[in-house]
Length: 263
Image 1 (tube, rainbow, N blue to C red):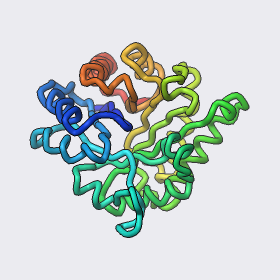
Image 2 (image 1 turned 180 degrees about the vertical axis):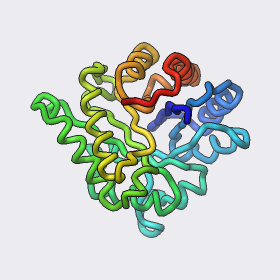
Image 3 (image 1 turned 120 degrees about the vertical axis):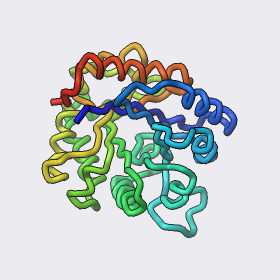
Image 4 (image 1 turned 30 degrees about the vertical axis):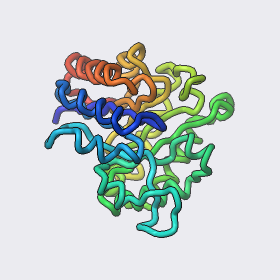
């Protein structure tokens, strides 16, 4: 079976409905390289608009940047998994460092969200990553695999294969982030893959992605030198031209790498 590379972006708190629609329309007119799986995570306000702007059968998957684990109720400012699906989401991001730091999202909350997402027929996109202090102390692998193990704590082994995981070191994301080297990323990615295989009864997760200061300048190198199944990109993909360039880079990598899966 041919290898698939996932290339996705979270728009975070950017784009009006019209700006999101314009991006989606440009994306729908573009040619997506074979075996590249694009996905975008609009703000809640734009999710349905992006869904409606993409043609039927579009290969682009939509996700939401957050959703609550409860089916419904008194969750002011939140949306449920069912509401996210109704608006067009197939993926649900959870555990991002900004949610953890700014909104108090805990490992337990991430686990409850992963359980609720699977129950709703959605794909959990579980974000993990260590802060600079943990990296400096040489404990990145232990910290990140601990986050991941907690996130999978309410899932059965056969459900792990439905999940996506994105390794995003905290020190490498945002405007002040430092781009990580392949030597820094690869050991953590390999540890996460081993944990996914252990938790999934040998099958592993659906895809393991890397994010953190990814751009059109370093994407090819990361895909070549790090054993990942794709990239989860921030501001470099907020403009549709940047996103399309990243899709093209992934397609070119597949053309050169053939169907060989990552080690």
